[in-house]
Image (cartoon, rainbow, N blue to C red; front, side):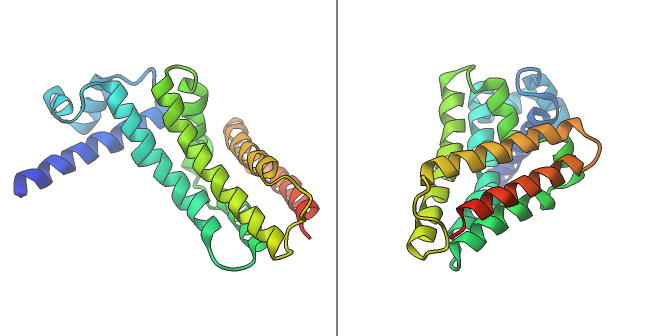
Length: 200
C-alpha cells in the first residue's frame, strides 16, 4: 500500500510538472529530460509510468486541461436557477477570476489547440473532446433558457455556444499581448452587449 501511494505521488508530480512546462514553454519544446529535471526524479521513473511523451501528453490533456475547463466553465452551467443569469455569471466572472500568471500565459487548452491541434490525431481528438463537452453544456443551458423564457427562442443554441467559446478563448490568447486588463474590460463590454441581444 505504501509503495502504491509513493508510485501514485511520483506519477502526479510528473503530470503536474509536465503541465506547467507545456503551459509555460510549449509542448514541442518540452523534452522528457526537462520534465524529469523539474521533478528531480530519474528518467527511469518516467518510463515506469509512461511509455512515451505522447502518452503523457494525452494524460495532461484529459487529467489536467479537461478538468480545469470542467471546473470553471462546464460544471457551473449545470447549476439550478435562471439559465440566462448562469450563462452571464459564468462567462463574465470567470475572466475576472484568473490570476496574473494565467493572464500572462493564456488558456492552456487553447495554447495546445494552437500548437498541436493539427499535429497528431490523438491530440486533436482529446482536445476536441474538451470543446465538445463545453459546447454540449452550453447548448443544454441555452435550450433550458429558451424553455423558461429567459433566452430568446429564435437563436441557434449551437451557434451561440460556439461563438461564446471562441470569443472567450480568443480573448484569453489576446490578453497575453498586453500588460494590463484594458483589453479584457473592452471584451467584457462586448460580451455584455451580445448577451443582452439573446436575453428574452
